[in-house]
Image (cartoon, rainbow, N blue to C red; front, side, top):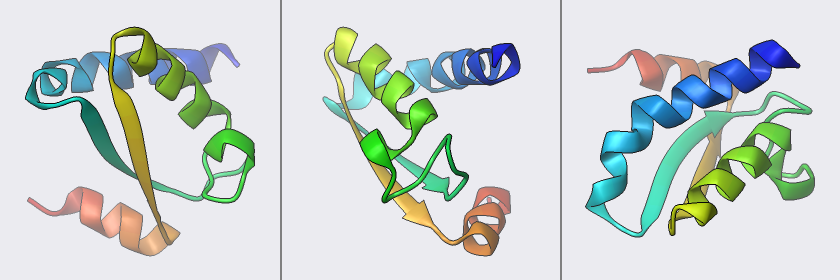
Length: 78
């Protein structure tokens, strides 16, 4: 669980500079139960944690879920 929290923390740090661009943060994710998933409760535990952190900072989170292969390949695009 500590590794997941650490990764989530690094994700927030990485995306923190993007927070100044609007009130809604839009991210793309993949299905990775129980951490992320379109049809999971609160869209998964990682999504719920990130949404809570962003809400505390005054932002909303919108997550689009893609199939595994498409999500990975879109993450590699420039």
